Length: 230
Image (cartoon, rainbow, N blue to C red):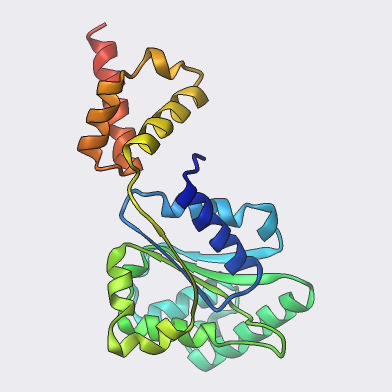
C-alpha cells in the first residue's frame, strides 16, 4: 500500500470514524484513486480490530432489495427480508448485543454516488440508531465526486448534517506519481532507476492524469511492450 500525505490523512479519518462509531464518514475520490483499497486497509488496521463490517459495493438497489440485503448480511432471517419493521428490530438487537461485547458494527457503502435518494434517506435513519452512549451503526459512504454534489442538494441536507468526517482523494501530482511507480517496482523486486526514465514517468503522469489505476495500466503496458521489443 503506497501512501501519499492525502492517503494517510484519509486513512486516519476512516479509522477514527469506524473505531469511534461516528455517524457518517464520507470518502470522495475519482474512479481509480484508491478508495476501495483504502477502505480495506482501514478495516484491516489494528485500530479497527474490534469493528465488524457489512460491505455493500453494488448500491443500485431498490428499497426492498436493500432491506433484503441487510437482512441477509446480518443473518436476521427470512421474516426480516420482507418486513422493514422486523429488520429494524432485529438489527437494533444484533448491534446492541455486539456493542455490549465491546464490538462495533459498521455499514460501508462503496460507489455511493449511485445510491437513489430513497436509499440515502434509509441510510440516514440507520445512522441515527444509537444507545445511551454512542451510535450503534456507523456508516461510511465512499463515492466519486458526484456524491459530494448530491450531498449539497436541499433534499439531502439532513443527511449532510450527520456527516461527522469527510476526506477526499485527489489524483497524484508528478512527484507522487514517480514515487508510486518506484514503490510498485521495488515491491516487485526491481530497481526503479533502471526501468522507467524520468521522461517515461512524466509521460505516464501526463496521460494518466495522476489516477493510480491508470498509472498501473500504462506502466504495465509499457513494460510488456518493452519486453516484446527486447
